[in-house]
Amino acid sequence: MTSLNGKVAFITGASSGIGYAAALELARRGCHVAASAQTVAALDGLAQAVAELPEPHGELLALAADVRHAAGLQEAVLATTTRFGRLDVLVANAG
Image 1 (tube, one colour):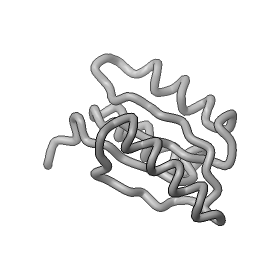
Image 2 (cartoon, rainbow, N blue to C red):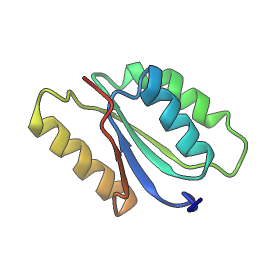
Image 3 (tube, helix red, strand yellow):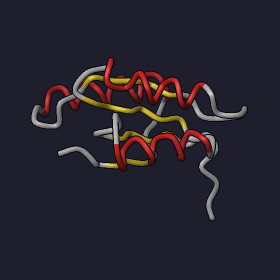
């Protein structure tokens, strides 16, 4: 399997279910994760779970973005590339 260490993933619907599990696993494997949900507060549990992973792990960027609004998604992707310099993986999970 290809290493995910240092890669950057953007995941929609990351506050629960498959999106949450994917974000946590990618971070565990060293991938930096931009996780989105309708509110940043909805991602508090994920942020805590990532912080509790054994080192080294990827960094989590929590973002508010509603997939029904293109402008908000564009802002979230821009925040991701500004923070991490690139985007390698997209998990379109929300909706």
